[in-house]
Image (cartoon, rainbow, N blue to C red; front, top):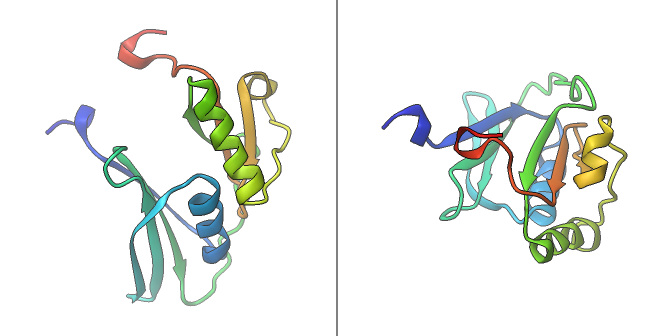
Length: 140
């Protein structure tokens, strides 16, 4: 296996584990794949799409309660490309109607022109882009 075919897990700490779980599970339709409690002082959850995607998100909380802070900028993004208009509409309805989230104005106006941006409880932003992913296959 090479890095070109590797599965990826993006992990980050939080002081808002239950709020983040709601945002990503209810808003984006992620499934809990695993969780752990007090593993060397850390608790956390792994979310993803078990058979559909080669990525997972892991959120951890250190039992000491040490503050981890918010996203460093408003331009720290996870971008999900949804070229199918109906799937894009379903995804934004899920975020807004089911999860009760409102889109935010993007720091980079490009993203407002191609989709909608949402901010999670830690200030990290998720873009749902109604377009094909550029650079796939090594081409722009």
